[in-house]
Length: 379
Ligand SMILES: Cc1cc2nc3c(=O)[nH]c(=O)nc-3n(C[C@H](O)[C@H](O)[C@H](O)COP(=O)(O)OP(=O)(O)OC[C@H]3O[C@@H](n4cnc5c(N)ncnc54)[C@H](O)[C@@H]3O)c2cc1C
Image (cartoon, rainbow, N blue to C red; front, side, top):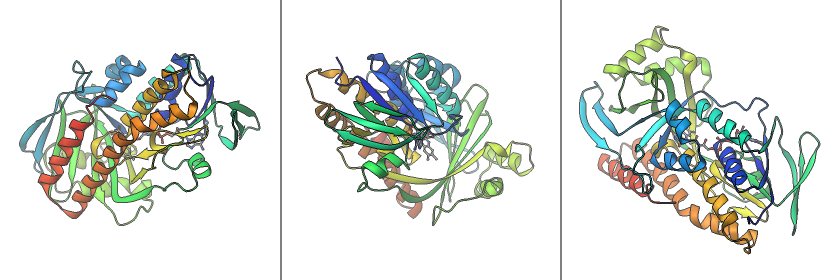
């Protein structure tokens, strides 16, 4: 028997949807509120590393993800001209040796798969709705919603992302997101590579990851002094400039965006921010999960993976021992999750620092290898 009967999930992103799916499997009643009336996700590629695939299998959506995304075995490194330098094999995960070590999928495709599973699992989903007030007493949390309705819950899961309002209210003393000095550029283009490729230039690196049978996404990071907004009209010209030093497939992509042959609306820019809220991640009956608790830069491609894993571990801890208190279950949850989240967030921040300072390539590749190996451990 789980230690909760009725849970509110605030936020219908990867963490919120996976939480709803996992809790419903334990017959826990779940309401999910998502602030966006259309439940949209922006159209970028998302790398789903081995641990993410392993956790998505537990959630029960792996077949759909593999059918609609792309997976591969290793990474090809090239110089800026596109000349092959070396190949890197990626480690498989403990307990998932039969799965490919990594892959990628379009964010909206993953969101659709998880959204369908959330609804099929029986969670009650309300769109265009958020929480305006939470008050707690020893037996429950009373919640007021933006549509004027109210509800009483055993647990409120804050999965409303990096700039969480619920965190700002309930964890007013928690750290806030910090700009890391890099911006991320991504663009979806027709697929020309068999498996992932990383082209290493003097100024930046450019990655090409397949996201489906026919498409791949290009990503690169750009050192920036501030997190100022870059207007979307400028995205194509800025990305074209950033790719100037590259030849081969990357040069073809650059020319495609320059001459309008490729669809510039498929370019996305985001400043990178990081956050690690110290454990415990609950205050009474309000719990932070996913980016709300720990947001990482994409250097290890593990942010979404951590969000899926959080959902899996939370559901396990809530149903491990019927005699345990909610406080014990949530304490155990953070104990199992904090060190792994810290490793991902801090290693990713360090990788970004090395890139910005032009630091040691050896330190960069050693840290990358050791962190990627560490996250293959069981959760
Ligand atoms: C540039 C970039 C590239 C990345 N690439 C990768 C990658 O390749 N692989 C990877 O694993 N991770 C990657 N990540 C990290 C990954 O995107 C996040 O870790 C993941 O999306 C976190 O999911 P989440 O559900 O916790 O938060 P979110 O995805 O932010 O979802 C939060 C949800 O809550 C909703 N919401 C917000 N406010 C409210 C409110 N007040 N009330 C109700 N609902 C609300 C939002 O609309 C949204 O649906 C990347 C991140 C960035 C910035």
